[in-house]
Image (cartoon, rainbow, N blue to C red):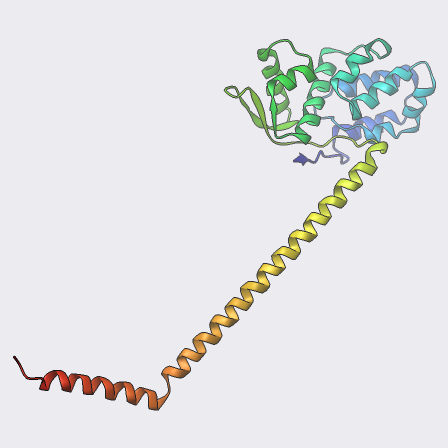
Length: 240
C-alpha cells in the first residue's frame, strides 16, 4: 500500500542534505526547523546519517536530534508523551507530524475509524479531524476518501516512512513470509496449468478417436444401408 517518495538530486530532502554538510550549531538547528516545516519532506534517514547531525546528540542541541528521529520513526503521541524534553513545534511541524502519524496507521489498516484517528492525532472534533485528513490527501501523504456516513477513512495508498534499524529484522521476516506465500501461489498456479493441459490433451484424444471412427468405410456403408432399408420399409408398408 505504501508509495515511494522521490529522493533524487532535485528532491527537497536532497537539497537540505547538501545545505547541512557545511553547517554546525545554531545554523544547523535552524535548517532542521525549516526542513521539518517544508512540504514534501517526509523521510529523514539520509539527513540523520550526516556526521554533523549525529554530533547534535552529544551537545546542548541533542533535543533536535531526538526530534528528528521522532519525525523519522515516531508518531504524534510520542511527541506529546515527551514534549517537556523536546523543542516546541510550530503549527506547520505539528501538522506534518500528524500527517506522518496518519501514514503509519494507513500502512497497517485500509479502513481507519474516525475514533482511532482522533485518539492518535489528539484532535477534539470530527471537523478538525477531517480538515487534517483533507490536508494529508492534498499533500499526497495518503490516497483515499473520507466516508462520513461510516465515520472512517478508506485508504488506497500512502507514503512510505523511514525504517528504524531495530525494525529491520521484523521487516526481513515480513518479506520472507511474503516470498513464501508467492512461492506457494506459483506452485498452485503451475498445478492448475498442468491439470488444464491434461484435460486438453484428453479432449483432443477423444476428438481424434471420434473422427477416426466416423471415417471407417465399413461402418459408413452399414449406416447408409440401414437408413435405405428403413426408408424402403416405410414406403412398402400397407395402409390400413
